[in-house]
Length: 315
Image (cartoon, rainbow, N blue to C red; front, side, top):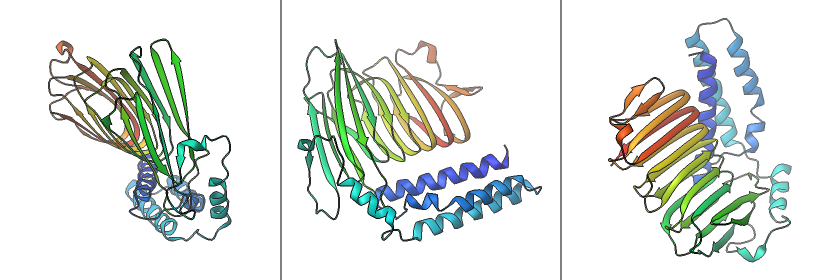
């Protein structure tokens, strides 16, 4: 493994982790600080070119990253022009259906609650949920008699929805329009309930995400997650004979629960990894459960990331 890959990987993990902690409210880390870290990036690039031992390169790189993060996480941007423009922009988003919004906080907080639901029709066989929602905390943990019941609370921008129907297939598009990271704590929490009758596909484009989905009550054909630094927890049930899970991220910690009776195949294409696949059989880059070919239910997992920890739990 090249040492420059190691410390660039460390940089991705540290920055991504700090964004997650900031979204959860555990510490303050400003997006503006990334732009002020360019001298540290030049230093890292220079270290990778120095004719010194690999261990020393890695040590120097880690020290540089830690110092840069400490500076970025403690600097105050609250009075900057950047902050003023972002706060102004949040209040002047055009083309939004404001009937879906409830301003349940003070104006100074710039926090809005967005709610919508779509009626379920018996003619719907397949439902596709597309979400482009930047960074934040997202939960799918309950059922509803509607096709979808969506509620979000954020201070980054305004949500926009679009419903498209094509025969027995309904596609739901949810995106965060003009979403901007603010100085101070960023908040973007979404809670989603789904109907249990259709066959579901999910395509999620997220940034630094804390994503938890308990999908055991649903028929799930496909889950695609494209993100930055993500903490992902999925639970898959036995209502669908074949499920494909595809995760691409800069750095991720992924935990997937599957039925013990299901056959599972894992393909991992990652630079640095910590794989916890108890009971799986390894064949090259592929891991599979015993007697996978003869299993009635099959779950295919593909993970592509710079750095990741993957844990597949059979229960």
